[in-house]
Image 1 (cartoon, rainbow, N blue to C red):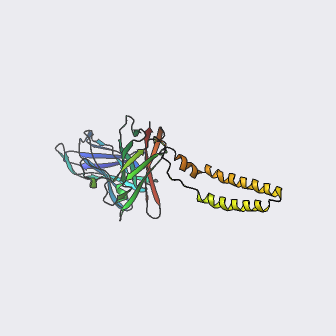
Image 2: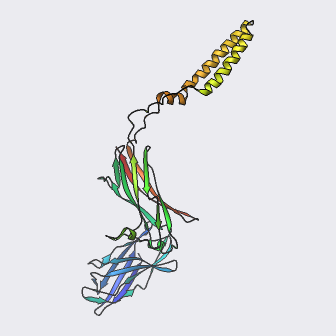
Image 3: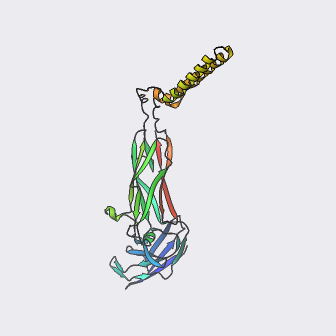
Length: 325
């Protein structure tokens, strides 16, 4: 793996700092930092990782060294070509003063994926012994927090707020998922992380997700009263009956025609009688069926964050497990 060397001089000895880039994984680049002085670890201090991206220098991480003089940060990189460098800041560690210096060689990384932002689900409630899982009974509701985290490189290119729409899929029948708010705003000042104790405005944007299941209704609805007559049926029945009756009366001397008309009249009344089997008749006389419960099972619910700049659509997703008992 390529390595970056940073040499920081102090009054006692030179200092060597190495920055190693691991294998690129999706949108996150793992790095390994080690700082030594005369072969011994520098037990403290900070190192800044910078990236030359789109002809602009962006600080992607500032990390603290452990007592072993090491750190293993992971930085989120946007799609494109990157040039990573390391800087050991001028500082005093354990009473020893070290001068600032920068690495002489940059690490080139090319990211093909769209890595403007990531989406994560946390705070699943009610909690479960199984990670990333919500367990509900029909009629019970649950909640989760959706966080959209932009890369610092991406926010540095924004000249206006960008809106990310939150949605979910993969739910069972008779269940719903409602994000509040549905659209999250990302601007050039949106942070990449949320330091402990920070105000909401100093953290990446979040949406509250409500997952609702439904219990079966206990009884059918009461059919409406006062059904009355069917005007369409009467509009066909009365004229038809009068017409056939008149024809039968006029053909009383022709017995065969009279019998034919009588059979036709009986047939017409029979056909009109079948209207009692239509859905409206069923509703008026029996009412709607009870609503079913959310079916039991294990479901993978996908939470999607999507944005569109008018030219291209960028989508990132994550998932959690919904168990309905």
